[in-house]
Length: 136
Image (cartoon, rainbow, N blue to C red):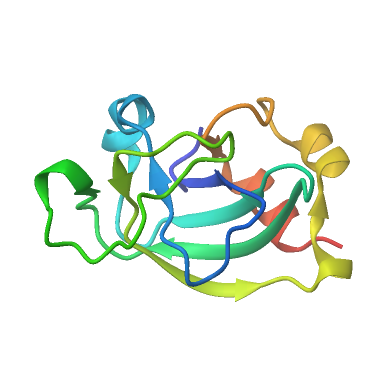
């Protein structure tokens, strides 16, 4: 992957811009060194939506581990796209959402992404990121 870091972050189908986005301990262990402030994140809603619906930006490299910060105001522990509780909250600012007719569908994602949509976090190189953000 080149020096520009971006990723697809999977969320449940009922995710809204007001819902915190979480990651599991396993995913954080795998990606923590690659996270940085300003990193772009494309939000992929899981089934039955199966599309990129928004873009966000990491605002701080410090992830909030929910078990260590009981004072964090999260009404319900965020779930991942497969309905499992997550361990961390991602410090993310939503930049924009896509209208339903402008969402990037799963078929396009599978054609362009280097890995299948079966993980919470899918790294993207600069070219892939730009293809997704400039679609359609």
